[in-house]
Length: 226
Image (cartoon, rainbow, N blue to C red):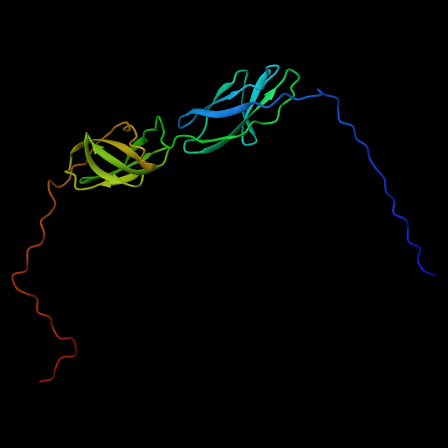
C-alpha cells in the first residue's frame, strides 16, 4: 500500500505591543560640531518644533555619551586624534525617544593640549666614564633629548640611554625632553636627577707605542736536517 502523507499544520500567532504614547517627539536638526580639543568636542543643534523635549540624548555611534536639557553639550574624556560619529535624540516627559538626528562626524585634535612629561628618570648604572639613564613616558614620542643642565648631550629613540666619555668623579644634572609624534612639539622637561661618576683613572690610558723592531714570522713545519 502506498504510504499516506500527513497533512501539514499551519497556524498563526498574535502579539500585542504594550500601550504607550501614540507619538514620539520629532528629531532634532542641524547637529553641528562647534569646537574641539584633543579630548573634547562641542556640539549644538536645533530643537524640534512643538512641545520642547524634556532632555536630549547624545550618542557616539551606538553608545550614549551624554544627556542634557539644553541644545548644546561638550562631550569629554575622548582620546586625541580619534574620529567620532555623533547623533542626538529628543526625549519627552514619558521617556519616549525620537529618531536620531543626522550625524556629525568630527575628529579630536591630533596634538595634546597638555602633553605629559617624562617621569621616573633614574640612574640605572655608572662607571668612572659613563652613566646609564632610564625613564617612562606615557604617550607617543618620536625621540628623546637628554640635557645635562641646559646643554643637550644625547638623543635617542628609546626611553633609556648610556652617556659615555665622562670625566671620573664629575657631577651631572640630567633632564629629559620628549619630541612628540606627528610634529606636535616637545613635552615639558622631566624632573632632574643628579649623579656623580665614581673615582677612576684621571684619563684614558695612552695607545700602545709602535714596536721598535718588527716581529719576524717563522716558517711553520719540522726542522730541516743538516
